[in-house]
Image (cartoon, rainbow over the protein chains, first blue to last red):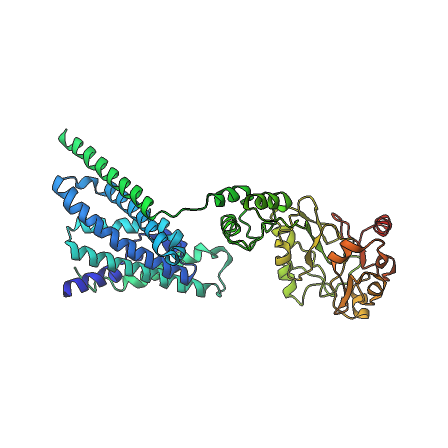
Amino acid sequence: MEEYLKLFIASAITNNFVLTQFLGLCIFFGVSKNLNASIGMGMAVTSVMTLSSLLAWAVYNYILHPLGLQSLMLVVFVLLIASFVQLLEMIIKKHAPALYNMWGIYLVLIATNCIVLAVPVTNAETSSNFITSLVRALGSGVGFSLALILMASLREKLQYADVPKSLEGLGISFILAGMLALSFFGFSGMITL
Amino acid sequence: MSTSILILLVLTSLGLFFGFVLAYSNKKFGIEVNPLIHIVEDVLPKGQCGACGYAGCMAYAEAVVLNADVPPNLCIPGKDPIAKMVAELTGKAAAAMEPQIAQVKCAGIHSKAAKSYQYNGVQDCTAANLLFGGPKDCKFGCLGLGTCVKNCPFDAMVMSADGLPIIDPDKCTACGKCVSVCPKQVINLMPVGAKVRVNCSSKDKGPVAKKACSIACIGCSLCMRQCPHGAIKMENNLAIVDSKICEAQCSDALCLTKCPTKAIRPFVTGIVPGTENEESVIAACAK
């Protein structure tokens, strides 16, 4: 149990995908202008990441690994995530239109994002079991949401700040992201897996 | 050799599997989208300007097809032809869309409007407005630094040498962008067929307005008393013309001849306000 808790916190904070491994930066800068949108996006990423990495775990362990086709991992995972997101979109559109209206464009954005691919790849490389994969995916999703929400809150405050003209917009956001990443480096070494 | 066949097999079967799953779920979960929405969207100009009040052309197409209360003539850049096409497609009655044009309610060119100071700051109306409401004595008039010109998405505006924007009637789509960016709110939209307009926005009392600008509306209400149709009313020392009544009923524009400061003038497009010549006055009176 303790092991899973450690893994969860490690993947959410100390090995945060966005702020320590610099994955998923496209969404991180694209959707962090507004707090509400970032909460929706965080939820969408977390759920897609969890479900797709479980599916990927099954495909990897029951098809690719027994056949010795680990080299196909990336291709198969990309295919899997893209189809899964499509499927999820259809199901949500039919059964939860309210959720669909909230997530609509974000779901499609996720289909091609590296952060969703990174979790199954990490799981495969460390030959994790089912529960470890689940915990890692959940932790990474929570970590991503945390980073996104922190960034969105900071950027909303930034609108009232007197930013030098040359740094307006994305420039100051990059600096801000750098500072946020620096502060997350303070956690490094807290948990060793 | 066997590995490559295995790869081929695995990838093909995985691809087929996901393909079938998606195809099946599309049947099972797919929602019929009214094909009319896409046809209507194709008709719209796709400028995604949002002037209709919806998030974009697609959103408006969806609303106009699905909701019976959404009128077909909301697309402002599309004007009448598009409104007719959308009405035809959706089977709604197309209320004729009144063509509109932006107009500047100020005729205070440099020689006519008194200045309280020389402005040398950033050449932008919003910036100038922050400094005691701009350099003109009249705090309601056009600042003439061209924020509207810079923001016009259709290049329909140019700044004249006299310091007032000229609006090209052929290019202006009445999208309302200039109306919203003007810090003085001196621009408004007006039906193209209107007879007369008031070239002034000053809410100052007569003597104050007159001192600040020689062709200001001084709020004397002569025009209001002259108009037999009741199209003109006075609000805060300023004559307001109801363009709808004016357009529909006016036959001899009596108001034009009575205005002591010539603030109320025939509605002529494509010129600097205040430079309407006497011929146009006679023409407006004859109409």
